Length: 360
Image (cartoon, rainbow, N blue to C red):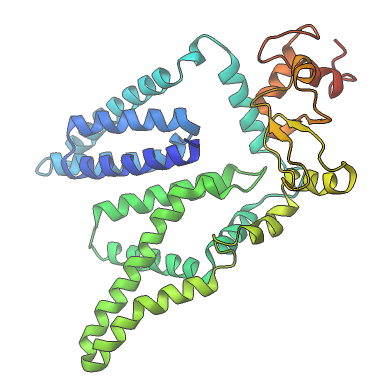
């Protein structure tokens, strides 16, 4: 299971549990919420964008469980629940990532990933506008405008005293996911990171369309037929306004991402410079025209000297820099022999890429 999809499933499950806790404030939902928070952090460091929803759910749960008590009592109740959620989340995170206690690999790669992803991309400058431009390109303007209008309408209704707990938590979770990754993501734009936000915030577009249709019922016979056209017209607008329909994978490959993805640049280079039917071995993600290069494979890990002897490729691809953080860390510290059979030996990378910097 891809970690982005797993994190999406856990985040949606956390939303369900948070909704229960906001309604009851019970200890069982607090424990479950803490466990999910720890698992989300262990999946792909997603706890920061879930925390605002957890905080609001705990405050709402304290108000529900201690409705007749004073504000000070409710605040003390909420602080105890937050402490419980925090303790359980730490335990769940450690249990799901136990090697962090015995090996510095996790902490070193996490620091490296944070420094890298929050830095500056060598390919193209990544800003807020870059993320939002890609979102509009992917969803289309009609859907994005509908989402924004739906969120604004919901906030106005909430400000007037019509609190909807589940939708409030969904809005906080979706907005947290969106703001977290668009704020810290300065190395590349990966919309998979925003799956929770794009899914949850789209609910508000649907809610707005449903309310518009319902409001037309008061227009008599004209409204009777008009309200039945709202949904088809909305779907048609989204379909026609979608800049990159999901079915058109070729458009995505040739579109804006083609200018940012080294895999496509390598594929274009190989088309011109690598003989057809060459045997190609690569360590990470790569793409080569299967019609021109039918013999290609991933090594499912680092490539070693022993792999080259065993598989004898005509060409091989070593991934450098931002696309192999954990390899980069090992290249700086490892001292294996040339013919080491260790599955994580990076001697080949040190010899071919780092020779001038680390001459082992």
